[in-house]
Amino acid sequence: MENIENVQEKKFDNSQVILNNRKELKISGVERVYESNESKLQLKVAGSNVIICGEQLSITKLDVNQGLVEASGLVTDIKYTGQTGEKSNFFKRMFK
Image (cartoon, rainbow, N blue to C red; front, side, top):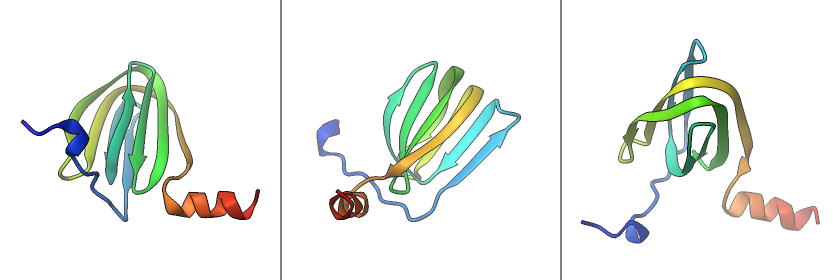
């Protein structure tokens, strides 16, 4: 078994978010899952941080090789909180 700390994140240039009746969510381009609980999913999707809020959220499928996450539950909010990595750090330094 491979140590989780040694697993490299895959990088994706594109992502797709499909939300069906606010109950079924499919996201491609997922590079990392930071947090998952019944009220929040926090992900890194194609270089951006994404927070999905809702009720009774659960990940039903996770394919780290393909960057796919499927979840069920009532989705109430999807927030993009900005890019991660060098691009966001560059802009933070420029506008301090």
